[in-house]
Picture 1 (tube, rainbow, N blue to C red):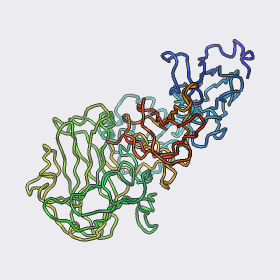
Picture 2: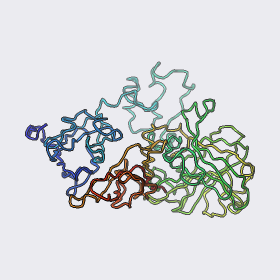
Picture 3: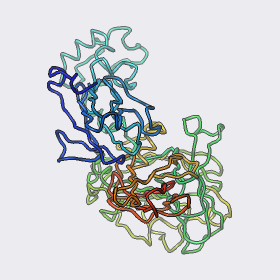
Picture 4: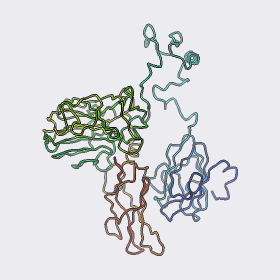
Length: 535
């Protein structure tokens, strides 16, 4: 809508942002909550509130779209609910009254220049009618689900021990009679402790179902190479790590798992200095804010995973907490070529602590083999002890390590607060990818794995007097853990393949490449780059 058509009543009690631009690289915003003029900021909008985006760019320039995704550019994925004049260009205003059922994350983007974009985080309570019975967990009981006789009993016993709610208060038909013993046992608050702290986002592991593999699906190297957030490590010999399909005849398949992380022992290696393991590092602040009281032996976490080995053997895993220099060891025994679920509940302990920061907070290492340089016969299991790299686990059987092409597969890795293992928390591929991109993000024309892009990123002139000076800004899809390390950058300069000169102005949200053309008329493009902020 034109600027003159927005009445004072419409914008009363609203927030206004004034939009400008830096060429075709980024929008600029000024408005409440921003420190001066900010390029492509992440804004937090509240449900039920109205926001005005005043596009002061040249008439017709830089159409401003509110969208559900940035992936497809242009006018695709427009979010129009509550939006007036979505895609309004320079000289107009876009008015957004945030619906109560709006998703938690939206985006804005210029339909003409995809690099001009940012996030709109949606906060605030949802409308009363937005949460339906169908959306409630099985054990989430509301007043509407209870018979009136039970409602009366609950009201009479608020903040009291539930022993006062006797069998006489339960009308026939409310709960099947067959489900009750002859005499109802007393139920008190004590009986309801140690339940999982969260039902949503309870899994502290990212990509535990091995869905996302941004870097590729097979590698003979160690470290992060295939399934995101999962590492394979070895000392001596050779291994292959891969993201593989789970057969429809296997038990994990029936539970919703389709991918697994597989390590193949390409070269038998069972000497004292040899080792093979799978590693996952949890960010410290995720542990510190999980609800687990690490220093209390009555507060627990539970680790569970599905695993299969081609060799029957007893294996070990350990939990290592770097900030406390403590670790906890446990064993599990597998039959050959049989998927098995391993579950272990682990208590807190005196002296155990994790820093509330973005560092390495907790390591999970599943060992297929550690030679005697890393083990001792007296290493205790099922208890916390002081970390010693030469005594990680008890002495191990070498059957798996001594078998060429022995395999070890893992999926369903879950770490949660509480006394028991709950069903695996399956997430959408989009949610899992977004979580993985906090630690690794990739662009690349040659990739086939989830996360690769087929988009060209153009370098734009930054000076009218020296038009061959070129810059390309990459905005990360999510905030990264720390300023990432850039590798494998590549592109074309005037039709000739090469590597950009370097990067500058990098932070957790974006980075700028510089690569000057030899003349003002040359086209310069970025086609590939990897950004790593892994632990």
